[in-house]
Image (cartoon, rainbow, N blue to C red; front, side, top):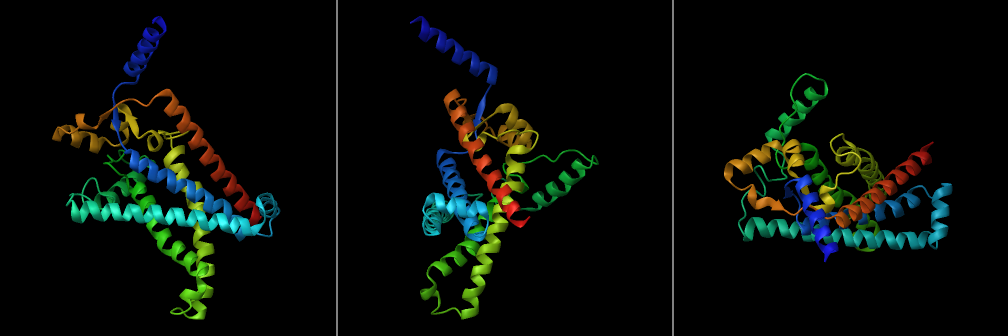
Length: 286
């Protein structure tokens, strides 16, 4: 009984110390992101050895998993899972927008569609970096988060289509000329490499290695953020919700110790794998 009382007191003291927390991402959104980064890491870990098949590390990796045939199998498996997750997300967007008539999907403060404010925030951010102005007041999504989001759509169209065109070449040969089938090989390889280099460098820096998130941004894993983080990172959204009387509806329980530790393990593992693949990719050129 005394142990239970001590644990409850410790939990209460932890909550008081941490302050209020707010929900940023739902469980479905976190699950979608987990599927996205897991399959992307799988595609990178299997695609790079095929792209740089003459490298020592690529041959060693292929030998360890049963050859390049096995690597190709896992590459296709990750591609199918990622495609299904993408289609589910697109279906959810159109369901919310056109069936449930949810406002703000394609335009407004809660939309992922770029607006004039994002252009002003980008220019204001550059001025702030140079010490020429104040830091921009971001809303629910910053301009770089929107860029990352739409990069997935670009990748699914360009990299995804070219990949499936190679996979099912006899089918696509019925309505694509021969030169196009040759071109998709180059497009898939180069665009995939560009995506890997971007995610493992720019995206990691923007999300996890910037000063207010270093060494790891836990929000995408726990779904919750402290009130201080909310105010500092997205003051525009905080002020807007407070003015509309909707702030309290976003209150959530602080993430537990187990949840934070699990998120750290998953997050640091993903970043470590990404950075390792980035180093191996660069080593293949030099």
